[in-house]
Length: 79
Image 1 (cartoon, rainbow, N blue to C red):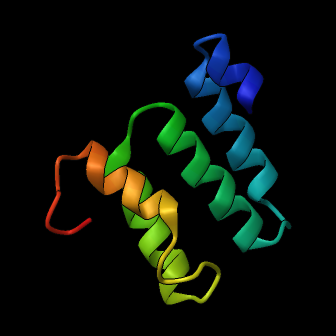
Image 2 (image 1 turned 180 degrees about the vertical axis):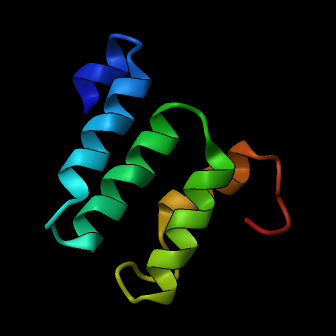
């Protein structure tokens, strides 16, 4: 996925994740989707995915990735 992102092929990264999603652990795929969202500057999507992971207890409530996403969105009070 990082190779796709670094070469500017984000659509291909999403397609790869969609193909990988079949039969895999959803928590693993969610983590990769969150990473892709952050790598491509889709911070609102990253924050949404992180919040879902926190609600599902896949991440701790004080996860720094959420803080970074909120700061990137300029949502200082939420951060």
